[in-house]
Length: 89
Image (spheres, rainbow, N blue to C red):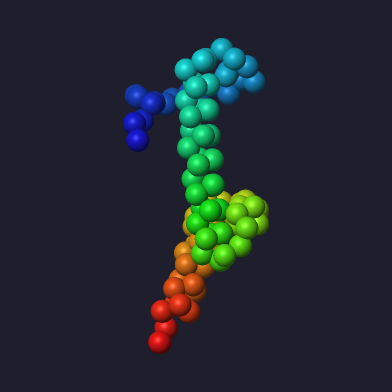
């Protein structure tokens, strides 16, 4: 993925009206939020497929976990349990 920020970041201004003044930054933020939303949705759909539960329940479960790495751990644990039970002779 291309890195939109070039050069050093010595100072970042977080004024409340920053997005209103900087349309490029606003567009980049919207694009980043869109990609993050797609990743969250994919994790929820994957978990719902593995556990055979409704996607809304899986997405709610994933959403209740605060950070992204533990969310991945939940999906990995569910997948590990699912395939171990399924493929154990």
